[in-house]
Length: 60
View (tube, rainbow, N blue to C red):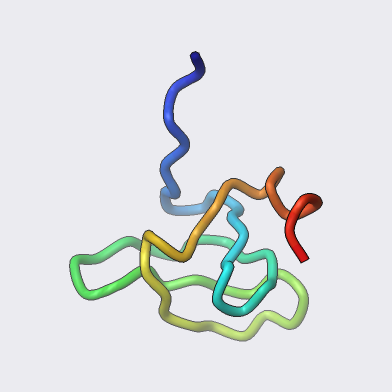
């Protein structure tokens, strides 16, 4: 089985909460800072809300 995906700085991810593709800015104990790829807006989410970017096609 492949290594478990883990969001890291500079990596793309899918934010289940917002339903948008994001790029991880930084990961902290208090949350994960992300930038939405679509509009460049910055946001804070949690590791549990992020999924690998290839999972976006199956969700909606």
